[in-house]
Length: 455
Image (cartoon, rainbow, N blue to C red; front, side, top):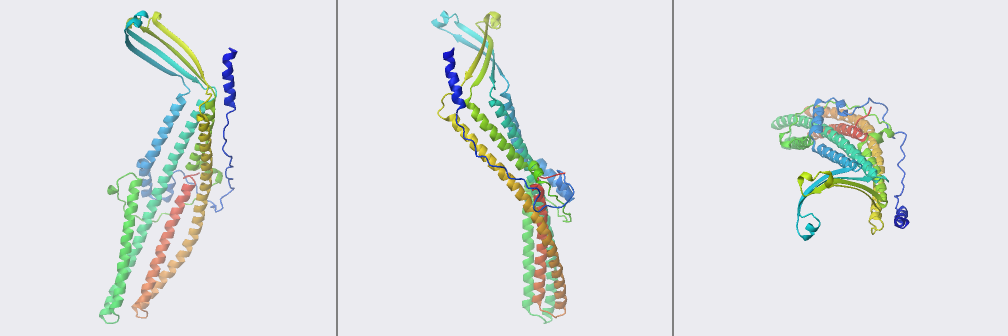
């Protein structure tokens, strides 16, 4: 007996001494006490944050997207797949029971000598079970559970992404509609000027050149309006894809853009790490990779398998299950790797490298999360200041246009001064609309950066 156990003991010593490369340890980023560009106070937003914009059409679009968006459906299918893999990993902790039945015909002298000549019927029940002494199977199950957690977080992240994309596309479209109205209003003003110029040309007060200048402005602004129509159509088609319907059958009626921006609190940095789906997913992926390093290491240790079988064999079906024809057996098998040409060692090295990669990705997600929040907080602050200054420019441009128009009608200034005033007013008013649109985009991006909702 001592002679038989000697190789087993030696193999256990070798397995315990197997070299394993441990990934370099890198500290996680230090969580700051507060955001550099923190917002003072604002009402809490729930998970249905888009309701705070007070737009029923937006609410309906987001609801439709959550129900029919194909990206969400794909993420949901991947979650179901990961849960199925978790079930398969958990099943390894349970014994496997199987039933086998067969019939065969034996011929020849050898069969006669063994008294098995003719038809032989067999049936047996087999039971096998791996004793998870060192926890390798439990590590695999825990890693699969973390994979499911990662997929669930990625599903939540996909939902948040689609919610934000719908809201941003919707408000971009509404901003374009406001810009369209502004350009058409300008076209109307140019047409009035053109009519006045034509009368003055007929009276001999101005030349045909003046009329041609105004016609140029009319045509240029009509072209700009058509360009805005094209961009609006593209945004409408993008909303169709986001809501899971063909672009050909989707149409969004024109609407107003009077929604007030909701206040967005910055939240605490520590809370950010627990609510951002991508950070949660990265953390679960890293933890699962650590368990797989442990699982790879335990491949060096022995595995223990218990098997049992009960059944019978008989040339007659009627006597197949009688006690006299019964067969019973129990077996315990220990398996220990001694030499595999470096396959297990390579598996450990690969798992360790993947764990190090997952750790770096997790740290990157944390850093990017704080960057996203700081970017949007600072953008909102600067855009608010820019909007105030731009409104002053709009007011000044409107006064300049009214004054130039009055002076032109009275023949005090040339047509060029009026056209320049109108161009300047249109430019600053369009820029004011774009700044307002940017504030909506930054608000939604901040909500997404903070994980969607908070209380």
